[in-house]
Structure formats: C-alpha cells, structure tokens
Length: 196
Length: 196
Image (cartoon, rainbow over all chains, first blue to last red; front, side):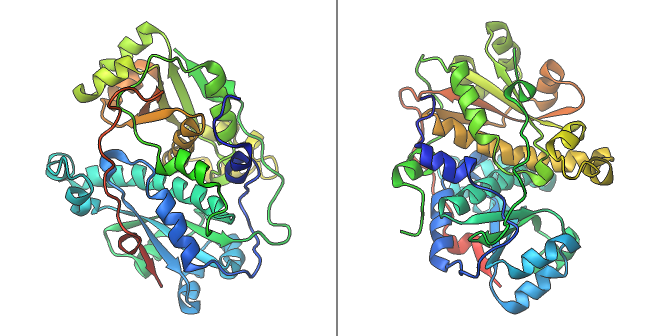
C-alpha cells in the first residue's frame, strides 16, 4: 500500500471523479460552498499569500451577464449548471499579507512592492488554490466543470476591477445524463518523470 | 455533513497536513513517487493538456547542482530532504496533444500553434497539476515542502532546455523535528467569496 489515503477517497477525488458537462437540477447550497472553502483554504501557498478570490454566480441576471462572455461551446452548460463560480487571482493580495504572515510582516514590502512580481506570484498561487478548490468540490461529492474558454477581458470588465484576473470559470453540481466523454489517456510515469 | 470525503482524509490532505521544513532520514521510494503520479495524473487540465513534468533529484551530484541555485534560506532543507522534485511546465506540451485528446486532435493546431498561447496555458495547467502533486504527496502519508525561492534561470540552465520552465521545487519526506511554524491564519469565507 504505497498510499496512506483511503482507496474510496482516492476514487472520489481522482480516479472516478470527472469533469462534468451536464448537471442535475439539485441546487448547490451555501453550506456546501462554505464547507469546501473551509477545507481547501488550508492548501499551501508561498508566504501564505492566498490570492484566490471567488465570485459565485447565483442570480439569473448574473448568469446572463456571465454566459454572454463564454465561448459558444461552453454556453449551454454554463447557463444550466446549478452553480457557477468565477475563480480569480487578486493582484493586490499583498495588502492582506501582514495579517496572513504575522511572523514576517516585512514580506509585504520586501518581496511584493512591485506589481509585476505580484502578478506572477498571484498567477501561480491562485492557480494552486484553484486546483485545491476543484478537489474540494469533489470532496463535497459534487462534480466540477472547469473552463477556460471565454473572453477574459469581457468577464473582468463585467465582474471585476483592474486588480483582479480571471483564472477559470467552474460549473458545479451533481453530474447529469451523459455528463462526460470517455476518460482521456494520461501520460505515463516515464513520459513525465526524469531522474538526475 | 456537507462533505462526502471522510474526515480522516480531510485531515490527511488539508487540515493536519503542513508544509515541512525538516525531514527524517527515511527515504522516499520510487514506488511511492509512482503511486503519487498514478493517482494525481487524473486531475483535470484544459484539453487534457497535461503540461507538468517532474525532475526527481536523487543523486548527490544532482543535489549539489540544485542547492546552489536555491535562495540561502532554502539551502539547508533542500540539501537534507530525502527527496527533492523540480516541478516544471512543458511549453511544447502540444506535441503530445493528439495522443492526449484523441477525439479532437485538431486542437493542437487550432489553439496551440503559437508559443505565447502555449506558455500561458502551460503555466496555468502545470500549476494545477503541481497542486495535485502536492496533494498526492500528502496522500502518500508524506510531507511536502514547496519552495519558489531560487534562481529560476539558474535551475533552467542547469537542468532544463529552453522549452521548460520551473514552477517550484518541492522537498519530500517524513516530517522531522520542529518541522513547521505555527499554522498561519487563513482568510475567512466572506473575505474571499462574493456572490452576484
């Protein structure tokens, strides 16, 4: 047994979990999203910088404003998923850093005084947190449908300010009929891992 | 119970898991790394592009070549961890795409013929896979110590070619004495999540 994680959990999070393209009508509750966040907030980021922000699209009007910026092939599922979340990187995350890193509050000015440095750090670390979030959706027994096919500038203008960058849009819910394609192949260990 | 994932698994992967700065001498076996990869390879990426590559640093000579490019504060732990992995984004991932996406092999040329587009896609999707990898290390009952404090150009020149970009360096092993600081605070749900 090379893994300590229970096989049922392995299946739930990775082996059986799939990107869903259709969903049932069952709503995704506020309590579920809160439980997901309260689990995945512990995932590591550099300097605990925690730059991920989430916009939950719950209103019909918000949904309409989002769908028009999605790539055509992503519109029907974005329109019909029980819940849609816009995952965002906050390029001004350094403002919270003294509170997040109380033993080293100087990090804010020592490392993150320049915007291009922050943008690079936020892109990496919010992406890590986006992955934790997808795992968290699966931990809640739900399926995630992450998408990057959209007009990013359009979404940013519609929902965000100039300090926030969209990373992905995620449909969330219980998988519906014909929810996914056949599982795509994966690269083998030897294709991915080299040893020096 | 808003989460389907077993509480012990929640603890193993998120709540009790911590970024380790010291490690015991217990080796990390090839079998463990293979089991980690064979679990986390199923984590989703856009178009199944799977751009993560991993360089395992196992030889004493490789370790020496790596440590000299690390930031000073990261050198002792990088020198002493049982295993160190360099996580890398492959900017030429599109070469594998027809094999990875057999139902849509045109994606390679339709979407990824331009290098800047590939670099942006690889940065996001390899970062997602880096997060899955960190979760996988924890799933193996090991601790990860991810680091971004290093001379990236130095590591790339030392270990990679011009098509690969270093994302992070990860120490891996069983946590040793005084392995971590007190857990840093996290942003609250209301600081991270807004609803429209």
